[in-house]
Image 1: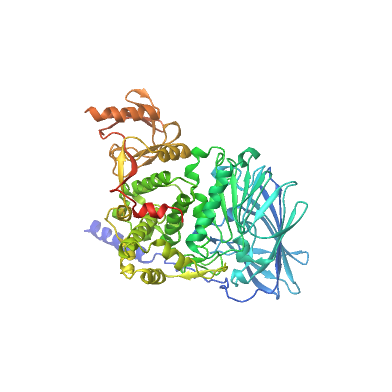
Image 2: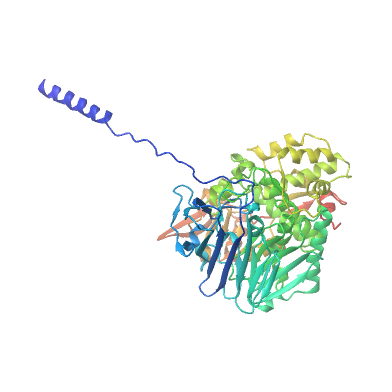
Length: 634
């Protein structure tokens, strides 16, 4: 009895102790950062950048920000950046921040919630804040994109400046100057006066400044493509800037074809800020009057094998109309703090992906056959990726923020930014439907001119909603376009939407030999792509870089952490693996891979007997189909 009473007392004591546990409440989050207002900022910001330290990759910045009153003020580092569709400002590379007023230091405090915001208390009598900071370029690829090398500079104003909170960025005047290494040339959509190594840029507003990056370099060549459009080409060495007249003419054709498609031009001048380099980080980023276009060595000098790189310029050029001039209403923001919402990226990027391929073919920048073969690769990638079973296309528009464009282990099951390529498929289907409904009298060209070809010369922004897209399509050919587009962007469990290609005269097939484009793409990416047979991609030294979910490789237990060391008892090489796949067609024996994962060695049998499979498009029927007409020069 005594023991029972003791146990009861212990339980009661334990319950009482549990009931008396502490229960904190959250500290409220109070947003003290003023929201952007569409009113003029009182004064012009000046920005001076020293970009001469190309050995260590350091940009040294001095900024002068006028103020009209004492008291609390918030300075912002750009966070949500157009074209990146996500909060991608490189805040971690800002260093040495010091603020002064009238020669006296002013303390700053980082906002406890918004790390991109800096609170200061402007002292009485101060008429300006003087800021010193550095932006530190990555010096190796594992730190991010390298933007300064001994021969090249990629200068993005948003990475090396602060701006005052509380104002639409288009309402903040700014004047900038940059000192470059002696003897270098700099190019930008912003006009500049040059005195020695110092470029003084025209007065503009902060929105346009951020949208007008600079590329500078030791080796430079200009290619005139039209009275308004130029390629400002820079490279690691002068030899990389040698282009034939036929190559340049293909780029001129691309500009001509784009203007014919869209009608209006939404720029006073347009600059392809083009870098050919194995040292500067590659890039493809759209701006209204320019684009940052970075490719590897050999763009001109190894023309035969640079085919996969040649959709870059037509894609980015099309963005001047689609994405910069016309932009999804929920993606447009008044400053670089307000979050962007990308629900219409399947229009912004998907239709730009569509036009990039069309323009490259119409211009002869990429041959029609290579364009068809690149389409085949796109269709096959979506055809073999099972993630459409659970994740709708529209949800992939969130992927820039969710994944921040970091590598994924199971992309075929997770999905990535499929609004690009699946968006292309949807717009191909729209084109085929317009042709069918109007008996060939109308096509997606009519949509492009009606939707993007308004307000000639206007390089502001005109936003749109899904209803605006639907209204334009209905004006061309009445149909339940809203229902169709909603279904395509929200459906799951259906096959990839390849019907537009079939209706336009081509279907996806697989053959045992790769197309020329497929081989060039493998060479460009330095991999062996067996996605459509074993279901894997292999990079350097046998490292597996991709495994297709539910493929034979997946079922055998392989993942991207494995590397292949041997095939059927022989040291691995891409050729030996392909030979083994071919031999297995007439054998019941599995393909035996020896794989390594860390210190573990495993024997992995793959019971696959389907042979090598590579995608290509096969023409349906005879005569000229919709896709043939779509790719023909206008």
